[in-house]
Each structure stands twice: as C-alpha cells, then as structure tokens.
Image (cartoon, rainbow, N blue to C red):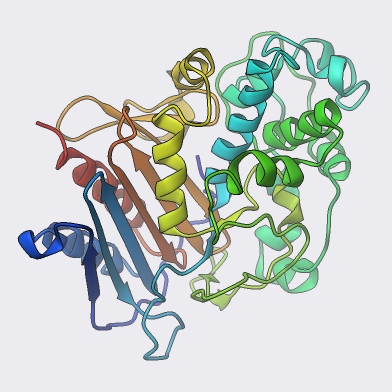
Length: 379
C-alpha cells in the first residue's frame, strides 16, 4: 500500500538521544503515558532508519516521541512536528474529495472513466468505474515502476526535477501494457488515483490541488499540510530523506518533483495534521454517513503481503493485535515512510514516519507501533 513499496534496503541508522514530549490537559496526571510510545519509536530506529517521529492522540492527550537525527552524520534531532512527504496516505485525501462529490450528487461511484475522461484510457475506460479506481480493482497498471527518478540512483540524479502532467502519467502507465481484463482482482496501482485526480478536475472545473485545499486543508485548519505541485522542496522544518535504491548505499533524496504522484502520493504534512485529518474523517466531519460507509466497506487486499488486510476506498482496514480492526494507510515516497491509523470512531489516532529505507523489520515495527498504540485506548 505504499507509493514505492518495491524498494527495501538497509539504511544507515545513527545512535541519537531520544526526545519525548507529552502534551494535553491532563499531562501532569499521566507522566508515564509516553513510555510505550518511546519504546516503539526506539524499536523502529533500531531497524536502521536515520530518524523517526510519532504522535498518538486521544480526546484528552497528545503523546509524541522521536529518535535519531534530522540529517545523517549530524547531531541535529528530528524536528518537532516536522513536515514530510506522506506518500500514499494522499490517496485517503483524494478519495475523500471524490466521495464528497458523490454526496453532492455531482458524480457516481458507478460512473465509468470514459464518461468523465473520454479516450484517456482507451476502450477500457468503458469498463472501469470510479469505485474500481478508488478500490484498486480496475486492473489498470501502476505508473511508478516507469518513473526513472524513483527506481535508480542514476534515474534520480537525472530526473529528480522533472515535471509530469497527469495525462503523461496515464500514457506512460498504459504504454506497452496488456489490456485491462474483465476479471479484475485487487491490484495496487497509483495510476488509479492519477485518474481520480483528473476526474475531480473534470467534475469541478478546478484542479485536484485546489479541491483538496478548499475541501479538506482549509476547513480543518491543516496549517502544515500542502500540495506542492511541481515544487521539488519540502517546505518548513523537515528532516532529510535517504534511499539506497537497493544498492546498499543510501543517498540524500529529499529534493524531488512530486508531480509524478498527483492524487496518489504528493502531499506534504505532519504527524499532527494527519492525526487531525483522520480523526475528522472517521468522526464523520468530512463525509456523510452513506459516503463514509462506502469508504469503509472493504474487500480483500492479498497483494499487500500482510495477513488480514482489506481495502476500502482510499482507506485500508487492518487487524489490531488486541482483536478487531482499525483504519489507515501507509505511505512512502523516496525515503519518507509513514504509517497512519485511526480507530473506527475517530477517537484515537497514531501516526509515525521515518526517514530512509530502513532495514528488515522496519515496516513491521511501524505497523506494530500503530496497532499497539491504538489498542491502548480499547477496553
């Protein structure tokens, strides 16, 4: 479920002092609340990432922990509420906008791609619906393996500042690809959300970026969340990101034009803003009951490689270690790796991100943090 989950290599972790804060109206009464979170953050750092930061919120508390450094080889700690590329968690924002349009009667989940984007995906556009795009059951191939900047050191250095239009991305994904079959199994594809962003533009007359800002970022006052367009820098305080592209030697990949991930993975945010977004979403503040029901109605997602994972519309349903499930989405875009989770009622959230590919066990350690921290709120 990550934007570039194919790349897994050992990062160059550095020992650093762990910094923890706990805030909220009852902090003084709960001095030990950050302890479990601190241990989880340390466990993630021990898998080889350069830096890691996490935040867990509930109605009366906010706990934070961080480990490692903001830059490899430096003593500068991870920034408080630093910004990072959230990767595929962007898909939850995009799906939310589409479902808002459905709730307004301007779009149907059963509309075909061809109805809104004539000729963009050829004859297959008559068979693929908006629902199938958001659910990853369209059968449309993923574009990201064809983006040089995401797949090798040489490609990154040559094309890290290259800009793409959505139409270019769709053409690139479909070039020399087999036709979409009638029998569509679940298959993760970032192209689905590029097409969803294009449909948002066609329906509203405004770009995907404008609609995300107008419908989500501004109403929720997400001050550290931004749609970078083709800007290659991460705005505001942030840690550097690193990737080895499978070579064993990581390079700094913080500079990247994210236009290849429009709709699918280009947003920049913070743990605080992502906590606020997920709480509002599952708490019913962004979607009507019928649309939230559609988003959280899930199908099996066997391609994830994690037992028990299911997928709705831009939102995963994952098992909790204490029983039951939670909703969320992992994300990755060149050295920034994140995992966001929220209880079904929106009352408790857990968000963690790391800078660098990490090593064997990084993904599992991040998943463990989210699942176990959410379990701490359950009876």
